[in-house]
Amino acid sequence: MAREKGVVLLDFWVSPFGQRVRIALAEKGVDYEYKEQDLFNKSEHLLKSNPVYKKIPVLLHDGKPICESLIIVQYIDEVWSDKAPLLPDEPLARANARFWADFIDKKVYECGTRLWKLKGEEQEAAKKEFVEIFKLLQGELGDRKFFGGETFGFLDLALVPFVAWFYAYETFAKFSMDEECPKIVAWAKRCMERESVSKTLSDPNKVYEFVLFLKEKFGVEY
Amino acid sequence: MAKSEALVLDFWASPFAMRVKIALEEKGVEYETRHEDDLLGNKSELLLKSNPIHNKVPVLLHGDKPVCESLVILSYIDDEWPQPPFLPSSPYDRSVARFWADYVDKKLFEAGGEIWRAQGEATEAGKKELFEVLKNLEGTLGENDYFGGETFGFLDIVIIPLTSWFYAYECLGGFKIEEEFPKLSTWIKRCLQRQSVAKVLPEPVKLLEFVRMIRKMHGLE
Image 1 (spheres, chains in turn red, blue):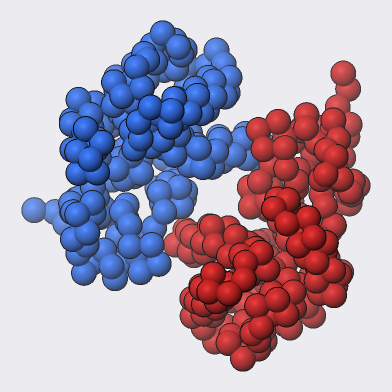
Image 2: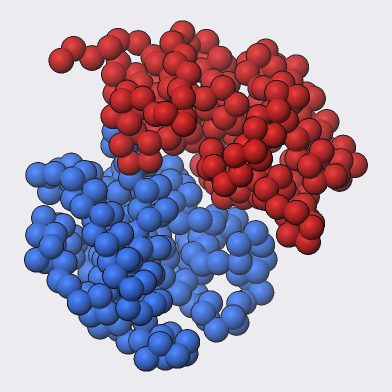
C-alpha cells in the first residue's frame, strides 16, 4: 500500500500536548494537514497509528507515525534542522532542557486536573502543589527572556500551551498566577508575541468552557 | 592516580543507575560510583544538592555538573561522547527508540512492582500486565539481534538492566520468562555476553533476596 506523502497531524483542538507539536511545525515553517480527532469516538486511523496508547498527538510523516509529543518535537527538530533550532547545541544545555521538559510532563497536567476535579482540602493541596511546580519553573527561568535563553526553544514550547489553562485553573481553584508566579506570566506574554504561539494556543475562555464540559462528565479522562 | 571524568550517584539494585554505568562502560569513560543508601532514606548531602527536584539516583556528575533522570543522562552521554553512537542515525529510527524507551519507563518496572509488592490477585494482575509489556517489546525486537538492530544501542541499554529483576518476578509470580518469551530470553543472553553488561548487572539471586527483604519489611512474607 502506498504511503500517504507529506505531514499529517492527528490532534485534538484543546490538547496542550498537540499544541506543542503545532508550535514546533509553525516555528519550522512546515506545511501539514491537521486532522481533528474525536476522542470520545476514536477513528480507525488514530487507533492504527498509535496502537500502544491510542492517544493524540500523532504525527504522520510520509505515512510513518511518531507518537508522544516531546518525541515528536525532537523528531521535527532533527528532520527540519535548517531552521529555528529548538534544542540547544551544547550537551549539558540539551540535558537541562530535556530534564525540565520531563518534569513538566510528570507534574503539570496531572496536578492541573486535580485543581478542577477536586474540592475542599484536596483541592487546596493541589493548588499548593501547582504553585510549587511553577515556582520551581520560575526559578529555572531566572531573569532570562526564555527558558532557551535569548531564543524561544524546546522547553518554552513544552510549557507554554499550559498557559491557556491558567484562567480555568485560577477560576476553579481561586488563585492568581499573576500574584503567585509573576515571572512565568511575564514569560508567557513574551511567548505570545510569537505568531507560532499566539496562533496555536486556545482561547482561555474556550479552555474554561471545555473544563466545564469535562466537569459535567466527571471522571472522563481526556 | 588519574581523576575519573565522571561520578555516578548509585544504588546497586537500581536498574536506572545500571543504565548509566553500562553507558559509560560502552563509551570507555572512566567513572567512579558513590553508593547511596536510597532505600533507607539516608540520602547524602551531595545527592540532595545534585538532584533537588527528585532526590533520586542515578545522578551523573560530570566535572561538578549534575545530570538527572536516567534517559536524560543516556542522551547526555551519547551527546558528550559521540563514539560509539547509541541512537540510530535516522530521525525516524531515533524517534522509535525514544518511544519504546519512554514506554518501558512508563510500564515495565511498574508492572514488575505489582508482582513483588503484592500478593494473590494483585500479583496475578501484575503478571498479566508484565506479559503484555514483554509481548510488545518482543514484537519490537522482531528478528533483530538487538533492539538497536544489528548493534547494541540506546534501547538495549534502557531495557537490559530491568531484566536483572526478572528472576525475582519469576519466583514471586510463578512463571518462566524463557518459556513465555523465548526471543527476549535469547536477547538477554546475548547482551550478558557484553563486558559492560556482565560487569554492571548484579546477580539476579541478589535482587530476589533484596525484594524478599523489602517484602518482609512490609509484612508480605
